[in-house]
Image 1: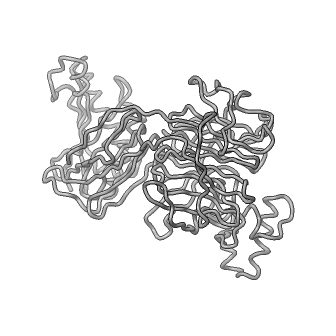
Image 2: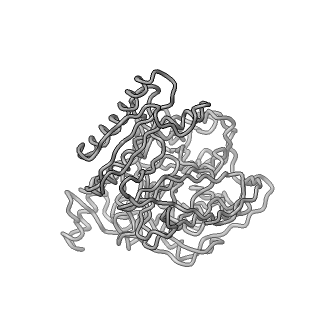
Image 3: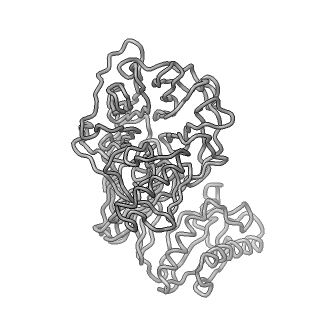
Length: 536
């Protein structure tokens, strides 16, 4: 499929400064009810808004205790007393009115059009919501993955912290929340919040810890799939003796919005990161009116696609959601329109699974019934796509759209697959080893795990692993190295559950080069491992 050309341009966001006029917009009544609405989190395309409604009578009543849903087991007469007991344990004081309790928090979703005009709301059920506090706190580079407050298990226990949830295609529409691991995580109070950087590599966390004066802002760095480093205090320039909460980090990782009560009521403040240390910041300044008011204003979240800064305010009594356009709209996503095709025949392959992952986060997947798929991905984040289907093998494709370019809205992507046939090669990216050794590097584990999964799905598949080297060294040493590397891969696959009788190995050393070994680049291509199908 033809790829659309790009247009090179540069765009810089504009942020609130003294003397600028901003038009304040309160979101409509079907979003702002007579109850409190908090934590507005817009999707990257600006067409969806996730928010939390507090103390609303029509909340999700699901409450598991020892794996039993108490609402279904006890009924509406006895259930409120049990829920009151749970809320009382969380609060540390008696709670009598569970409907109006601040621990009654559910996620709601508003949807609209491309210019951010919302026209409908929905109220998801379990497992995104339950009778305990629920709130989306940040989007991630994956448009189907979000971070929420608290950690849950299926028996019904809840712990402080954060979880990751995924939008799914099943009847519930959401996966069960899985815990996010932050090293040395604790907070002295129950009030926490965080935001994730545009590229998914940094968290800015608000918490009360032993090195904070009240609620302080901290930075954490990604260490793996849903794993983060211990929080590091942002320092005394950003943090005051008062409360700093609800951070939001701009798309370029330099501008930080947050709320603070350092001047009395809660106000929204802005500062800029001055270097790469995450400890050197400009002095925060208070956002101008009408963003701030004499009442509490907090929970800023800037959406670059629409140019709107969303926030909450109690200026009309309850906590409501407002927005102000503080920058011109600048698209931050590209719609990838893809198809899975047979490499030989060029025909579309139906019922394929497309796995994708972004910025080191956990892999997600799309099931394509007709062989076509669509996915919005953010600029500046590397995405990897891998097609899968029994009877075929496919190779990983990588996309990265630069943040400082403008592109057309749509990008076309073909994911070729090869049918599994006797004597055909299984096309995998290069498998990497320690230099001159038969030790597989961790960066190649994912591809070998994918090969193991394919072999487990197709019990009749048998392969031959062929090791090859360049011509630098003694022939007998190179032959031995190629054999040992093939055996190392076999051992890896066997450890993953593949029967060793299905795998043969052979080492050819430098006998079958792909080229003449006349340069380092050419020699690197000759150092390879190939996978040949011997039976299916």
